[in-house]
Amino acid sequence: MKMLLYILFLLPFFVLAQPAQVAKLTSEAKALEQQLDEEGALQRYLEVLKLDPNNFDATWNTSFLYAKIGNRQIDIPTKSKYFNTAKDYAAKALQLNPKNADANYAMAVALGRMALIAPPKEKVAASRDIKKYAELAIQYNPAHSGAFHVLGLWNYEVASLNFAERSAAKYLFGGVPSGSMDEAIMNYVQAIKLAPGYILYYLDLAKALAAKNNKDQAIRTLQKAQTLPIKTEDDPAYLTQCKTLLDQLK
Image (cartoon, rainbow, N blue to C red; front, side, top):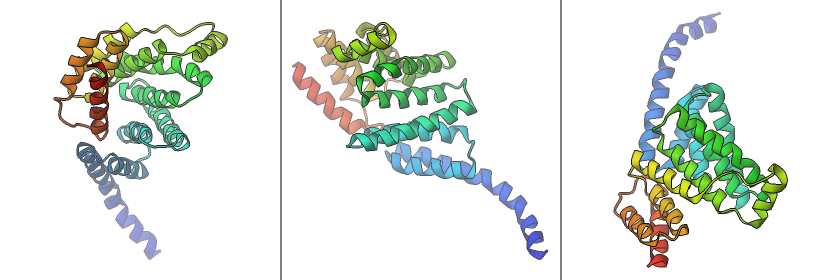
């Protein structure tokens, strides 16, 4: 009886303390991301979800970080594990808030990462959903730079489909999804207009420009990327790719 009374006495303090702890962990997660420690940020978001399983902000960010960290893994099975986890959290985010741009963006990113390591049949099958979620993110937030970047990647990948992938698309869906390098360039330009500080946006724009034989513009885009400060954990690797592509184009 005494134990029950003690628990009942402490319960209000626990209820009051939990939101404060969630806020503290969320703040730490965002600070760690700015410090280029995505693994640490992910762990903080996971701690938030232990306290508050339906916390939307932590859910979609957990999905996004699993996709980003997974992309840095070396072997395909490990990448696949991370990407599938990212997809699961994105699905939960969509369940919590289906008309939120970040939730739809997280799903587009997770599916996009999975498609890049998938065989031709699965890659083509996923392409329609990737586009759908990217476009929904833009519909719910027309200023979502990340969604425009994903849509640019989608157009770039569709325009770059090889013979096996195009054959799979024709067999499964009656043809290749509509997408072009010109649309990819327009999407990347819009992403940069909305958020001009991301090195990846310039790198991917330069790749699309190079694919269209716009060599001079691609070079200028890469040179601009090299002037930008490091903003994400992947930026040093992106700058290395910028230099490699720049050397190839000169």
